[in-house]
Image 1 (tube, rainbow, N blue to C red):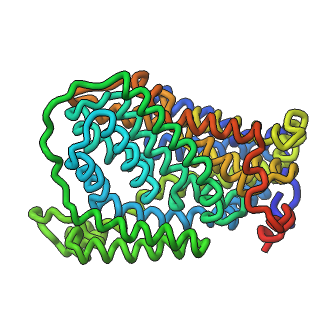
Image 2 (cartoon, rainbow, N blue to C red):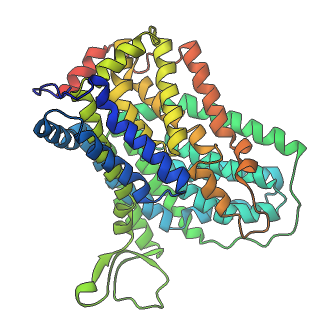
Image 3 (tube, rainbow, N blue to C red):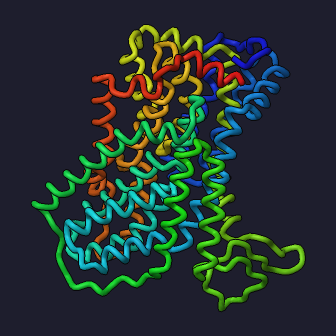
Length: 483
């Protein structure tokens, strides 16, 4: 409940404070499954209409209005928004620099083929996704470059596609600049670098299992080998790995994602311009220009615009930012209506132990993310509202809770046939030499299933439950949140 505010009452009682979430989920199912859309509107409209419908159940309309504003303007909501803006620009510069193509081209041109190429594809995808924090961007780069090359080199088509998606899931799970990493950390009031360090044991274990799975299956199955021409790529783009490494180091060293991504943006932008990969600024460049530019001015009159790679990076975060702000309005409504208290009392009958609480949190995240096909919104909906109070009630480390949220959200959401990640992946193969169906790819997203097994095992064994808690108590994190 927001400090200094009174209870928001609903017709029908405290459970009615969940109306925004119910409406949101129902409309998400309608827009994504019935209408078959993953557009901005398919997410924004359900989140907005959730607030409209719940309005009519609130007894005090004025208090309802104030609650929405407080929720959207809270520090809890603004921190991930700011982080996403900076991370979006950094990841966009890397994406437009051709780094992914450089990594892919280098691997292919070293003569790798078959299963070995699938292994390299997974590692390259994981590296790029960890650097850029974008699972979908990794899938686009990998399926556009690695997939056709791998098919020609004799790789098993579904295994190769699954390896690329697995690499994207690995990076989405681990990257300091990933929206899921930022969401999970800020929802629990802990620092991103600390979360990343404590998450390594899960991600690396799942990654190792993925590699073993690729090797075992690759030994028994293969595609049709055929000659392949060397993949053309700009070797200079590999220099972009330098700002990537420095950014990750700064993030871990300082514990501040804004400092790290600011350094990353400056270094990546400077490297791209200094090496000729991008222009610093283009003013009315004309049709003959093939380079991207950090800043671009084009058009005339009222249609004259200022854009470029930096603008595109900011713009790429608008969907998740607006969705987050709307969802935090719903979260505030639920809290002020004491719905979280009601839910916790109900869950308390099931989650009577730390292990039971962890299974409850994991189950909620897995179900919600699999249903929505998106993981960041699921973390936003569950993280601060349910996972935080439930885990702190049982003395579970906030770092552990953040890892539960993130790791489990990067499992089925990347592997179920109806999810945007799989649909997006098979879309790249539709007009290629070996089209794939969603059902063909799903079994080969080994990382998703490996991470699911790792997290279930860690819950049963109690691994990580006291991460970063040496010399600290749960109350220490409560005091930090108040400050």
